[in-house]
Image 1: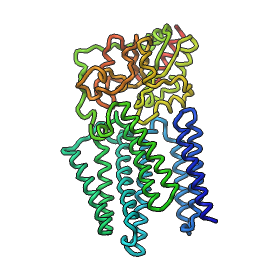
Image 2: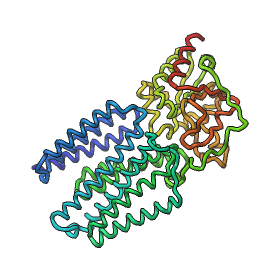
Image 3: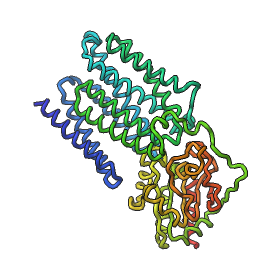
Image 4: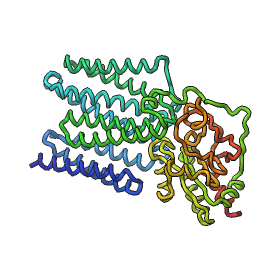
Length: 460
């Protein structure tokens, strides 16, 4: 009877996970999808605790209590700007959990006998779980450190770096082979150590501009690690959930890479940004402006397109953007938002921030939809975006960004860029947009600048 209840609970949880993925595909239904996913996870955990192999609950209770308290604290204290690194950290914990559970199964076999007591398939899934989980854990920690600016966000490429990565992969596979055929504990330790270092080596050459892609990729790996652990435990819910996360993460990774017109291989090994800027500002003129002048431009415009980027997130300027939008619409100005797939530091970053400020989803336009209209736009207001509006991606074959689809902000009649300074974006590439004759730079904190513009609008 208990087994029937467990499997029935797993079936219900699996259905909820599938529905959650479906609802998460749209910002309109993402909240409901999140709730369904959480409910599915709750059901999965509860019925798992009914499993006959679990005989003591003390340490499980401690783990649930500590984890719940930590999760509640993080939910209340982590700012929206820190969500990318939070997602990276959670990906890492997922990978570590999968590797540790698989390792515990190997440890149980050693405690009761030897690894030779396990089948070839069990050893294979344990090895895969440890390999993928360890790579995910350490890779996610490096991604977290880069996003948190604990270390530089620029690509770090060591001498013969990619050769070292291939060597680490070879050592990992050798450890896997030794585990499978010699059935010795040493193989598992070699596999775990080499895979952990490999995760670091893979992520070090990834620059800040590629962070949305690597976050999605690590998310996919965490799902695959969970699926492999599901095979280790013969847990169908874990297999289904892991496959869902792995597949959806891989699809998202491909979407992000396609948005940059690059392959995943190039993202992982291209080290975009390590080469330095393709052009310099020498001999070129920047036109700075004031909040009052920007207010005049916006007040007499018929259509304004706002292009947000990570600078908006850093300045927590989304609510000021909402105030500006409301003020312009009261004057009869049409306001739309142009969203680049890789703007920010994680997939959907800008959508989340704008939704937090209650900006209607109908006003958000994907790059492909908004670009044909850009030549008719009176003012393109770029808030903290950089690489995703750099015309060098279209015009300069020597630029590391060349070929990457961008939002055609430069084609608007007037461009206003809100930035703290002239520093290049994540890719470390000088932005040709800043030096165009129709571009004006409003320097300063984006939130304060926008609030000043809103105040100035009242006087126009």
